[in-house]
Each structure stands twice: as C-alpha cells, then as structure tokens.
Amino acid sequence: MELAAVVIVPPAESSAAIPGLAPQASVREHALNSHSLASLLTPILGNDILHAWIERIRKLGVPSLWLSSSGQEKLACSTLQAFASQGIQRFLTIKLKSYAEMDLSDLIHFHCESRNTVTEVHDSLGQLGVRVFDHPAAANGNCEYCAPADAGHSAYPFHGYAKRVLSARERQDLVGDVLIGGCAMRPLGKEVDENVWLGEGAKIADSVRLIGPSYIGAHTEIRSGATIGPFASIERDCLVDYGTTVERSTLLPGTYLASGLMIRHALVDGRYLEDVNSGVIADLEPAGLTARTASSRRRISFSSADVPAWGSKGPAAQWRKVQL
Amino acid sequence: MIPADRTVLPFPCPCAPNSRSSKLLRRKLRSALRISELPVIVDLSHCGTLNRDDIELLLDCAAQGAGRDTPIVVVAGSPVTQVLLEVVRISSLIPVFSSVEEALGYTKTGGMSRVERNQNAVEYLK
Image 1 (cartoon, rainbow over the protein chains, first blue to last red):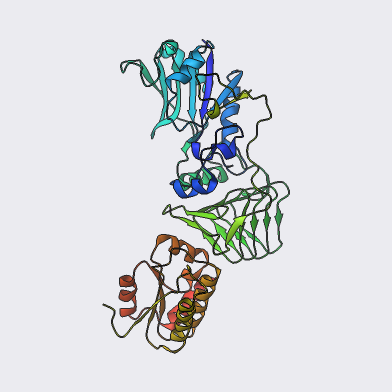
Image 2 (cartoon, one colour):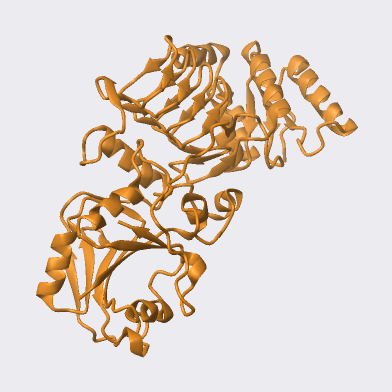
C-alpha cells in the first residue's frame, strides 16, 4: 500500500517559514493573537525540528512528503480524495507540535501488524500528534471526519524521548534537555568550554561571562560586559549589547537586545518578549530595548522541486510538496 | 481612600509625551520625589506601554529613591509593565506592586529602610 507522509505545520507562521505556503498571518499578528511565541519552526540550538522530522520520514523510503499549513487538525475529505485518486491510501500525519526521537519504520510495522485502520502514537502524557491511517474508501468520500466511529483504532506506545512544544516554557524545557544531554539532539556548534557551545562565526567579547550550559548561535555577537547563562540559548544572527544578562532564556534568530537589560526566564523574538513563567508577551520596541537585527531571519528553504499545484479538488495554496 | 501620610503620583502617560499636561506631570513627579518626605507611590497603572523617556524618568525616580529615608515604590498595574520593569532592572532597584492597595500596604509598614535598600543593592550587584 503506497504511503503518503504529511506534516501539518502551525498555520500562523508557516508562510514565513516555508515559502509557497499560503500566507496566514503576519509576524506581528502572530505575536499579538497567538498564545505564545513558541514555535517548532524556529531553530532549537541551531537545529531545525521540521527537518529532523523530514529526515525520519526520508528513512522510510517515501519519495516525497507534503507540508500543509492548514489549521485543521485532520485532513479533509477533499484532500484524502485527491490523494486516493493518485493511488495513495495509507497516510502518516505528523502535527508539528512536538519533538520526538521516534523510529517511524517501527510505527509503520506496528500499524501493519495490528491490522487496524488507525494507529495513534501515545506517550505517558497522551497523544503526540503522530498517526498512521489507511483509507481505502477515501475516494468514496469517507474521510477522517466521516469514518465510522467503530473503525479500528490502536495506540502505539512510545517510550522514547518526546517533548511537546506548545508554550515558551515547554520550548525552554527542550532547550534545557538538549544543553544537558537529556536527549539525542545536540547543539549545532563547537563545544568551546564545558557545556558552552559556539556556532560558526560567533563573536564574543573578552569580558563576556559565559556560564554553562549555554549556546551561542552562528554569526551572533555578544558585546563586552554581558553575562550569558546558565541555560541560555542565543540563536543565530543575534546581537546582545553591552552589559546585558541573558539567563534561562532563548533569543530567536535575528534578535537585538539593548545594553544593560536583564532577560530571565524569557523567550525573545525580535521586538517581543514572552515571560516563560507567566506567558505575558511584552512589546519592547517602543522603549528601544529590542529590535530585529539587520541580518534578518534565514528561514527554512527547500531547493528541491516543488509541486505547488495540487489539483482542482485540493486546497492548492496550502500545500507544498517536498521531494525526499 | 489614600492616607494623608503617603503621596500617590500618577506617572505621566506616554500617549502624549510632548503635551503640556504631560510635561507638568513629569516636573511634578521629579519635584515631589526631591522634596517630599512621605513615602511616594508612582502609579503606572494607566500606562499601556512605556517608551524610552518613560524608562529614563523611572530610572531617575530610582536614583532619587537611593538618597531618601522614605521609600519610593512603583505600581506597575499590568503584567506587561511589570515585565518591562524587570527587563530594565528597575524592579531590582525599587519595589514594584500590581496595585495601589498593595503598595499602600507596603508603605504602611514603612517598607525597607535605607540601610536595607543599600544591602539589597549590594546583594544584587554581587
């Protein structure tokens, strides 16, 4: 049975992250409307979570995968019909809300063995947003919504490392786990001191105090008198000005922090700062405290052949095909 | 009701930074901090956000507070303002409260003495 892999990315930022997907909201709208600045479309210690999932899918031998920016939790009838018309009747869907060190081939094997229509991955906290389902009747209009309630379901128990990233706190927890070696992901850079990693081209002034575990991304500059760490993650292309402290916090790519600030338990994305504990989002730009650096975000880009047109029945603008 | 032995000063709202009333409020705030011997509560609860001038003025307030025997406290009003005050380190220099009532309660008990404040500042600098 031919398998289609679909990664459902959060709609709010998908257009900025993945060229070709339908625009959903500007970054400003995202910051003001969303509950959190946390997103798995931004790097974690230089690592790209979407690409980590894509690599796992690639190992399945699937020729291509589909990225969807649909805000829907499940695939719509019309979408399944469009897939079915191409002879695809088994689906692996991954909602990009978690990082999980999962062997997808074992999941597919489990699904085949169980002979159920739907296999949902669970860990100790519940569903992880990863499922495999067969849909022989998709072409007849039976979709996930309309499938009979008694359709066979099975739960795939996952005992490996998994972390949901729906809030700034969960994101910071994942950063902490990576920094202390609590999972297989490693910071993208060179370990220059015990638990201190520097990305390529990072510039650190002599008087900077680096407290491990911490990470400073590629082409980021830290100016004199700053204190970084512990548990600080400064992603690429950031600039931390004189005397500023960043502790148990993350700066997303391309963030500028003014002099003399105290950033603690926070996630900062350009002008916005989210307090990790309270979830409060503050706009620091009117006070001239933060900004976007000149070297703006370098987002994920796919150079592979794209097939944005999905056919008359499908929501073409919300899909992007990635050749593996 | 605000007791007569404490002064509550509304912080000049940043929405009209160059207006006459705003300038008047800023002058009033500065002179009250300089001459008043009563505990002073600077109330930011009507401020939606803070700009550079506001932060400068608040740092001025903190500096005035260092040389006084009676405390200066700030009412942030909103969680967003509270976050801003933490980021610019003002909350480590002067006490910040969520409401005027909380601030009144603190100043009623006398707040921190100058010696305690100085000790706190030293601890913070360590």
